Image 1 (tube, one colour):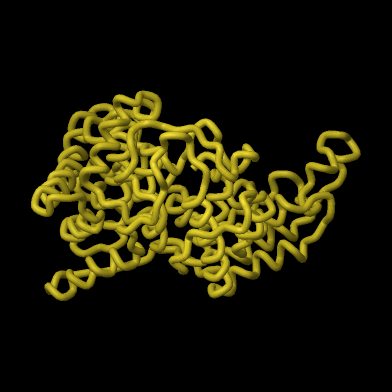
Image 2 (spheres, one colour; image 1 turned 180 degrees about the vertical axis):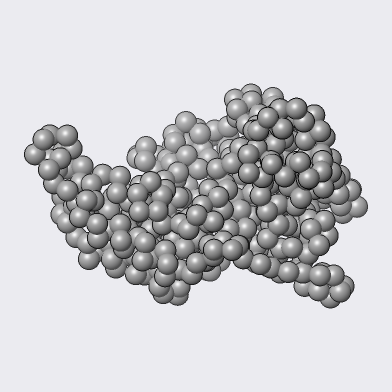
Length: 405
């Protein structure tokens, strides 16, 4: 990607520009085209977008173009008076480099390293065929709702019923994801309001808890909130906390030795040792720990408490600034951000669908410390979902939450 992030073509970045950039192929392209064009049934347009997923090079080029433009906007955008400057992130490293470095070190030291996809893993064509089934289903193009007045003509997108694309992606109609891949696709939505929520199937944490509590605790994998859980809450709390505190202590010791924040790769390194070299379990543990420390922490605060009480959020923000290097993204670095929030009146402020004017999310520390766990979650998804589907799906998800994140 070009290092020249200092030039933009005009101040106004339009919705059409953004849709063009997010025409990544697959779900992102179908959804982007759908939002841009109304009142006409054009399945050919949607088919082109879906079939673009069969060409990874096309996806890579489009993603590269979209991220480059968004980086340029971020670095040159208008900020509130007194707000910190957004600059290039000199700490940035691709996650593939971070993970690869740790794995290479393990191999050279003779330690076991293994990667295994889930049982029921399907290649990209499986997903593409499921999407096409949904697009070609006449039920998604029924027009009788217009005659009854239940749905207006303007609500149809490319001639499809409103909600067709969202329902397909979310698995509400014509499920796209194989059953085994659903929890992996939805993993980023998990919140950890109770210790048992961290006993995630396939994680090293789950294995640790089961080993500590015995065979009966295996019910936590299939039925977290069973009667067994109610009678063993304290034991589960202790086991989960022991595992998390072990990671936190290791990270903080590394920071003390280095005298500065460390890469989250040290967490992945630690988890590989705990998980006998299982890459998938270690990616998952790294994501869970990073999310927990950003949104709850080992005092077991709730997500809502952290989000709504600045004095509690500050603890999480400070821990990240002190301990975890911001290697996530070529622009902006949370280590340089204050706890203060700023309003947003930049190039995208003219549209509520593109930006939340109340808070400049580029400068919102609590928002920015979410970057690490989201990135590690995307890497973890590779155990159950092919890369091109992840790329298209993540692009679509980014469009859905763009104005908030």
